[in-house]
Length: 508
Picture (tube, one colour):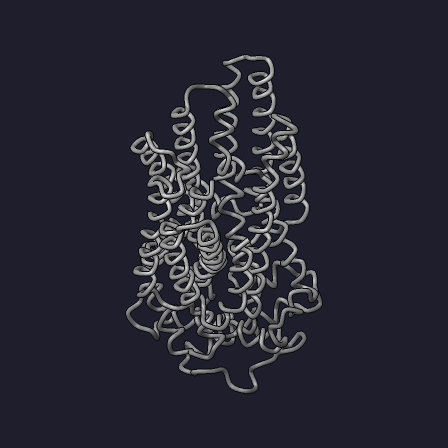
């Protein structure tokens, strides 16, 4: 529940102190929590330390994908945001391996001994990724969209130049992209203040519902049942001794990590929506396999069936890692308007951790009463989420963050599309022609005259798609990605997301 508190708190902090310093704050709290857990002398201190680490994980799980989305080029935003999930799975893999080593080296010691070494070593190792995050985040730039919202335009344009690999801050591509961000900020300011009530206004409440429900379904895939209770699940299949169960867990952690990479490719090439749909179908089928052959193994003693059940678990992990694992975080971080993006992603992240806690709490009881049949519960939710994705989730691939109003055009609160496009085009044109801001009489264009003027403006620019990096499609992403400095950003999150993975593995 500490994660829920952290996600709620950072919904305000991310707007107040910015995304970068919220992540750094999360790293400080996480490191302190790890130290306290390893040094705890009684249960109350240990519980407090775990809650403290939970707060930090809530902060980082909300801020990191948001920060990546706001600093990434549109053409590769989904790919970069999935680095968040990739590093979580990497942390789980490393922590699983380290836990296996600790178990083997201290097998003669009682792992539950209050003053014993095994669990203290495991929790102390959390400090390493926490410190790594702090060191790597310090040189990272602030979010250019947060800077634009706060009026720090010189810094914002400088950050865009740095992120895209340009030496000249006044390069045409830099100016066009930053002016389009500023135009989006100005448009949102005209709509009104960014209060909590804005989340429930027409045009936004649908996005909030998608963010919250997506996170609900991600947890009800049952992924954390596999991660938290995998040792018991494999042990009950009776495939060997205790050490065999540890090996199965490490293999599953490796699969979870390795198959996140295809998801990074698919999120830009295939899109978000297909991954949601086909991922749900694949997980549903995997659970049916686990149930059928797990039942044959546990109830009727067919040993070979247990191996098929293990393959079903691995198939489920592959399906999750390629789809709902990374894509939910990508989708959540890009759908909300800037003025309430922190609040929207915060509430969505709270949904994730709330249902995470609920499932972790009720799973042992459900599994005890239903035995293998409890897999059918998750098969059912995977089927429902497949239908839900097909019916309700729109595609966002290839859209800039400022164009999300175009995607969710179910509200009178959203400005007509030609006005949004006009705003960005006017800002870009006057910037390229030497104006630092559009003339006063160019702010608004109405009716047919506006549409005709917009066409002329586009022609005079020679098409924005040849200038603005935000308009690059997936096919042109590779050379552009090679030119921009997103590798620095990815490096900056290795520590933080590995920290989340360590926390998950220790919790299990």
